[in-house]
Image (cartoon, rainbow, N blue to C red; front, side):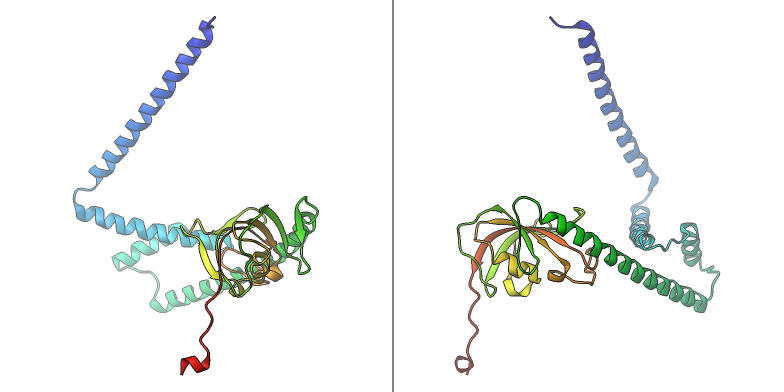
Length: 259
């Protein structure tokens, strides 16, 4: 039998969901109409777009600065922009240059300190991760310290360091942060195997075409002590690699043939 009480509750929930959806659509439509009515001419809309795009760019820059401990008063920034547009700047050109130079030095010092702190932290965490990871089922460690796990065995050609390989890949930090992938670039990556980080050169040579491995690469086999983009110095990296194709590099023309 149908429980009428449960059925009525179900109908009420369904009706409420539909009502909320309708309300959200009406609210969005009203917002769009209000925005359209705000601009009386196309020139006004274009001017607003210029201001909005500049503000978004500035906001991203300020957020990056805040990550390293430099936080500027946004009200003062807005006041400075208004004064600049109205020709009523309260500082001389010399004072502006001095203030910006001081800020640049402060940013550089704090960025350097953060990079140093991040590298020290990554070194400790990376060593701990690799020690624990080496004990996990299926993980193997080579003489160099490279760790890997076979996710899928390939049956095709096994590359040499001098070969050209085509791969799909995903690279992440040990905390799971993805810093790069072939999917991000919308196509597989193709490169000569001896022209990438040592961990890749060694690791991909263990694979056969059609295989998929996961590599755990110590910093010494990756980018070492130096930060690279979103990768802090001393970072242990994790790569999932699908080996799609192996191709022998073309032989360089000899001196005799070049004459």
